[in-house]
Amino acid sequence: MSTLAIILARAGSKGLPGKNTACVGGRPCIAWTIDAAKASERVSRVVITSDDTRALDIARGLGADAVDRPGELASDTATVDDAARHACESIGWNDGPVVILYANVPVRPAGLIDGAIERLSQGFDSVQSYAPVGKHHPWWTARLDDDGAAHPWEGDVLNHGVYRRQDLPPAHIPDGGVLAVTREALFNQIEGVAPGPHAFLGARRGGVVTGEGEVIDIDSRVDQLVADAILRERLGLSEHQPSRRWRRTG
Image (cartoon, rainbow, N blue to C red; front, side, top):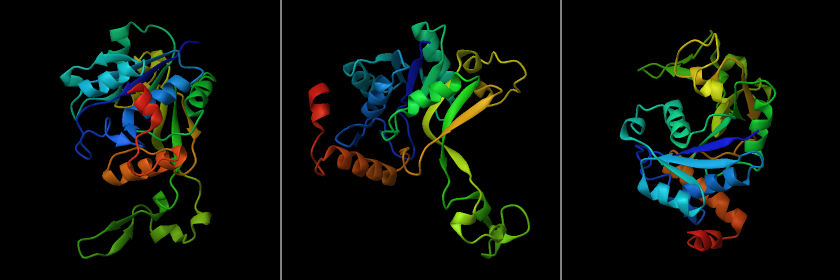
């Protein structure tokens, strides 16, 4: 079955302006996600939706389609699903699942996209990647009063009485690595799904698990530095050396 990959690359970002086209691992950040989408055996078409002309130019240079996103779909309050539906309609995508990818995720494990699409085909309306929360576990979440007193976020016992990480029950959080949805779910055509910001995920929602740190979602300068270090180590690059791959295609 044909699958469309939609890469979201909004120009605005309060946390790290220009993060989607910033240099990471010697290349523009968005280039890594384009590579991942094009490397997928199950993705048949790759399109970037953005209000950023530089991101659109990079996408075209790497052989991806580009959709100029209108301003009302690129604001701080614009939703992921609205932007994805607009991209589908702009290129006339009428059949097959859709993989939503974020341009600010330059690090994701090989095979992650194909794994999500494979799981989607098992009867799910949507599948997204989840990472273990590690030491940031909900059982260790607390409320702090103005005077500094600590209270459990929920329940009556601080830390649920657990003080060793290995004794915590498994818990996972969406990591932004991949989100695959059926076209029916994306266009809110699944019966019985309550309206809301996540209605486009459908009724039967699944997940694939990534290892701790396998996906780097850049929302801050610290995230960018970590991703840059990981990618440069993989490529054997020095601190300021551009990627040969980018010099060849950019």
